[in-house]
Image (cartoon, rainbow, N blue to C red; front, side, top):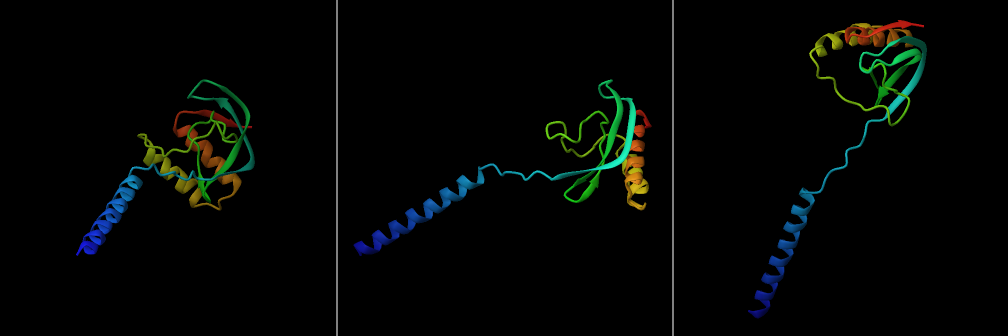
Length: 136
């Protein structure tokens, strides 16, 4: 009888340890894996003044950007895409989201998806957002 009480007590202790371990794991932060950004030079450039900070941009590369294998576009012409500290990936949630989605869809997704198509679509996206940029 005494041995049954010891086994029951041991079982309760093991169960409590398991519950505690599960609860501790619930409060541990999860590490999110950042999306991998791949850049390719399109061979196209732009010049203008950025609306976000008034910076003059001359002969800047238009980069073909891919996140996890999917083409993505930049909404800030002054953000340096080719540096790790200058680029942060975010989903655009502004009032022009639907229009920008259509520009990306018809300008690039429904095209041959060449670098020229990408660069043209990228410039049009910036124009929709108020940029005044030119090909160089």
